[in-house]
Length: 605
Image (cartoon, rainbow, N blue to C red):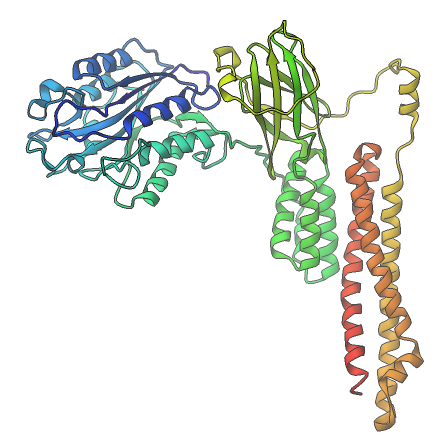
């Protein structure tokens, strides 16, 4: 967030007038909302809270809040209090010293707030009203009426703001509806946030309000999320919104933000093959999509991922399994997924640890979002590098969220910063996280979201760098061939199984014809044995199962030791195992059915 962002939270829950019911939620609302708006990883607002102020103090703070602003400023004003309507229909916000018969003198009129919003130089102003109107007051007060209509939004739409400036109002309830606190309006219970403010805080804090998953929570996103949340909790409470804005207003960053890649659709010939009536043609198309999923060109890989998702959902089981297996390989796989820095002297050089991202380029392309201000993440060729700030002592515990195109993952980080003059073991020790010792966010602690991209092939150096003797021996080590050899063996076994199946069918058909010619004196079991149909059937079952097992070993070895294989070897292994699996599974299914038919029919015919 590059603009200047300011928030004023006004929360009143204590009133001198006995006719105004004490509200349970405002203090809780203010604390929760202040936390999430001030968080530099979420709202990044400068927040001021006014609690149980008099009407005069409220007017002064509100006017000061809107004065002396610039065009780049974004202002957010939040009311959590009673709303009162005068005899003339004007809406007022109750202060701690409000007297209902003297609203003009002891309350804050909505017209005053509307005038401050209209006159400010700030480019955008947002007003949240979490107020109870009329019926939410005690019935014993003769000075407060619950009849008529408040029409909250109309009260703020009368005056247009200065040209070029935008405004928005979101209210927790409309007209004379109640603004529920929890699920009831009872007075005696423990403090907790109201339904409306709880939805605002939850949507911003969790990122669930980022409905379009673009990494930002816009005003429209937040309203849609709050509306659904509030209506689910209390169908009788209806949030409303009115706005005059140019463009989108982003209220917060989203912790749900992920990678968005515009995929290049697969060639039309490949898409046509996916819809062919021939099984083998569709199988070949799926195999080609699996190959495209490994490509370093991310838009190409993303297009293949989208098509494979459809195959995994809609195709027959063998092809669906093939697609699902390929999609599993692009899941985020950080190694290690837990870092323990142990005990670190305060003020020392920030230590760092490396995390390797495994998988094809699409699996390594992700958004990295540190959850704490003392965490810093830098991208590297093989993954990322994690640094810990040693400025403040105490136990540190936090997470680094990784968000890719297909899924999410978390790297947990632990550290203990000790005073510089304290001696102690430096090896990692288990401990209980103490959030109170975590350093508070500062302006310089704001960490931008990091995008980890698969490395590009570097240009070949003119002269090879000098290395130690041990490194030279490592560099000379030839790439492994285990996975491609296993994949080739799997394919050979699958072809053998298919050939045995064809032989079994040929001999089985001949045996059945011979049995039919023999009439009542014949026995199909003797004919099948005479023609030798059982032997290739057994061989088919054994070789088909062996093909699947050997192929699984090849894929496991490739995933576990990917750094030992060249790109061509990895691609070849994927292709061979996919074809082997596509041949072996149908052969096994048909062979099993043939065996069942033999066992059932031999006794009857």
